[in-house]
Image (cartoon, one colour):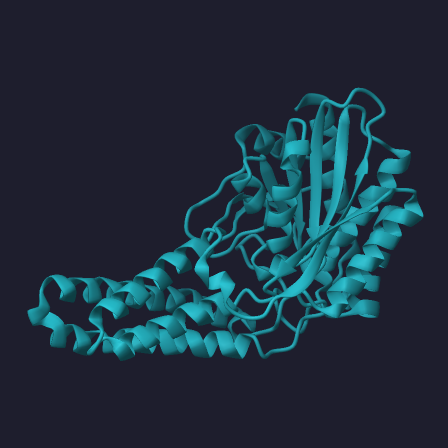
Length: 388
């Protein structure tokens, strides 16, 4: 086995087996952060820790939105103006949430401390650019909607239907204020939107009460690869590129760690690009050419060109994929105007093995795939160092 892959696997085992499930903002996520910090120190780095507050759940904001729609329906007969305003605020906030933007839904519910841990590898020559290597430490819960390909398809369809019903409710409530004579008709028709609201409530409550996954593939492979490159760059540094080695917290609560990192440090970057790592232990390697929940986000063309050049090597065999109905921490980098791409282990049909499932365990790691993934990343960052 390649010594670098062996080192990578050791990090994955420590995070997913010794520490185990690492929910966003939990004590076990803190243990993962402490492990990453200790590893940076062992290597001779001076790691930094950025603390932030996490909602600790990607599902809770949608629960709040769905409950608000249900309340709006209940008060509509006597307080139509209030019902419309509640529905409109919930709808706008839901769209903002899906666009990774701050919104009122995030103000509701408990919050927990989380943190990012990072170090910087200096170049041997003039500092001309920055590469941010990023992988998250935390793990997601294991709801039924992720339990099989069939359930994922059902959820994808029904979530769109439910959202459509809630949009319809808001529009009908607004119309009833303009034409009061349709008030009772709106009340009758909007009953179907209540089905959408209650279904979303049921889905989110079920999700938030399931166990956390051990997260070997998602995403001990990501943060473990950051640590592996941290050690490799000591003996094999880049010439003109400073490398930020970032292990993020609370990615599974819609990327609060990545968003916090870019807010805090964007002003320090020099000609930056972000290379994000996701689920690189079981399939691939592949690279995302489009992602996003509502609006599509694509890698910068110049960065994508470098990745495609390396992907074409016969011993790498990487391929492009589209991430539908989801987004990675590369999205947060793009939103911060830092070019980014995610290297990920999706199958050619876009399926993510063991994604948010109890089966995401250390024994699923594939050494051959990981060796190709390591070489893929290594060649990309060294090519960027020379020609980007």
